Length: 392
Image (cartoon, rainbow, N blue to C red; front, top):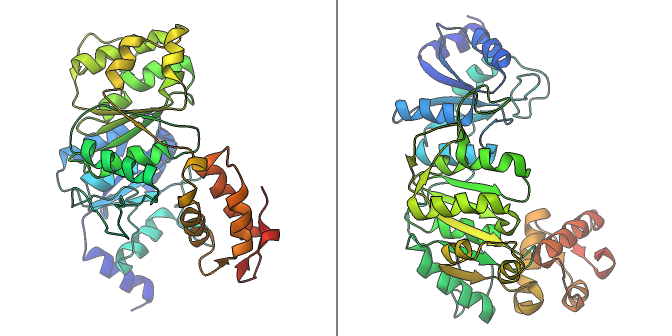
């Protein structure tokens, strides 16, 4: 018996295998369904992230493959993968090329989806993409010297130790948190940490960058809309607030939220309800809100650019992240961690460290990260990053 026949026989022994094709491109979904022979695969289609999640919810304990077109119309791909990874750990996620429909798994030559899936299933190496894995312990406190260390965070300085302490305390509650600090200080990372050490850690963590979404679209992104509610609304869609039900909604750069929308966010925070554009029903949602900004909201209030009542609603528990220049005790550990991330095995010389220590870091940790990434490129094949490799 030939190799192909043996592989097919091994595959047949494992039937049926579930597949959900997730793409807003109906033609792509149909082409993939036709490629996956119905006798071999139990194929379902979803035109959006919300539609796929609904299919998964209807099949508790779903085991199978999710073919994901990253160009989702309603959810960020990372957010979708995080939700699936936490709620449906037995679902295997494979990314698709939005144009060709080929699998993005590093194949050296174009491979039909059906053939590649057979190979992956037979070899038991279908990759899981759980970008935000479930956390079984409510908090992992690592004794390191005399301080505390949150999982995935760096900071032994006094200011960061105070920050970790209050973060631990508030994470256990459902209290609304406002994280402030200059750009590049890691506000988004702290928001993720609060979620991951909270009781909501196995539920969605949905990010909305209020400065990155055009004002005309932001309300629809947050609250969702019904079919026909405006030109181009060809299907109903849940908003990101609803997608975060049971978990955490992170409103990044909330200082850039338009004033008209601020009143609607205030109503949602006070009543725990959302109403989709064009809809009449108020939908109850259970969401913990974390907001972040690098703006001076009190100054914005004085200039009538931010609602005072919204400020006091989101700033129930404020946490300020200090700039890197005020926590230089952490700079060396941060620098070495970035070196290990970008080029493991390479060391950082004392001369290079001295140059880093003399810089004021207006771009904070993000600027340091970029400087180290440049250095790991400039060092080439040498074993040590020296002063001449540091470009500031």
